[in-house]
Amino acid sequence: MLEWLVRWMRDKYGLNTRLVIRNKIKNPADEITLLLFQALRELLFNVVKHAGVEKATVEVSESNGRIEAIVKDRGRGFDPAGLRAEGGHSEGVGLFGIRERLTYFGGVMEIDSAPGKGSRFKMILPRSIILSGPEHSGEKSEGEFKESEDNPMPPWPVVERNKIRVVLADDHIVMRQGLSRLLNGEPDMEVVGEASDGESAISLARKLSPDIILMDINMPGMGGIEAARIIHKNLPRVRILGLSMFQENEQADAMQKAGAVGYIDKSGPSDAVVAAIRDSVQK
Image (cartoon, rainbow, N blue to C red; front, top):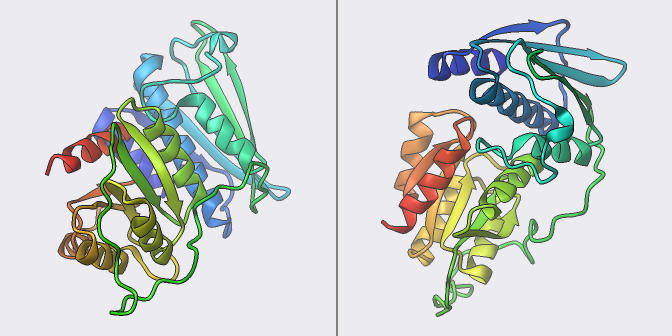
């Protein structure tokens, strides 16, 4: 996965990244793997946007039950004390978003930088999940949904809407956190619910009547394709955007045949997600 990220940053942004894996990380929790991938991607974006150089180094190692990842460059650098407390980098959810997500799972981030002296970001993550943040409401359904004539979808309610109302359906907590922070920061969007599986997504679609559902394809239990089919059949006004870690044409085609209006690569830039949502509500 990290090798793919290095190639993608080089091909898309011209950033040549030296990847050093000191020892193989064996079977970390899925949430930790995704958090590491997203955080490294975010930090490499920062190099592209702010460092003024075309080279960076990523070092990853594991010891004593924890994973350490370092991103460093010899670029412009900055004064860490001058970072705004609310974050707000234009790409993704920014440095403070990374730190918040690390803290949620029992990790930390150290920043070493100075103007003209480059930057060094060190992340320390546990191998296993150590939740330290609040529980997220709305990720479980009120009961398993079974589509039948005795359990039809309710009529579409008439409600006033000033913002695009989004439901996130993804079994990875970190992905939902990042997307929620990103979308709630947009003036015309709000995340109204979160689901961790297809049944929960169907239940929230019935209950909340969102404008958009961002639907992960691969989830435990009922997957995104089947959930999209059921929602599209019963609530055709709900726009569904498929989500996956990598662009896979067969899955994208299957998702669109199930009723999705589009398909988004999770590893793409955050701006693409926002643009896809705005485009979808106009279809």
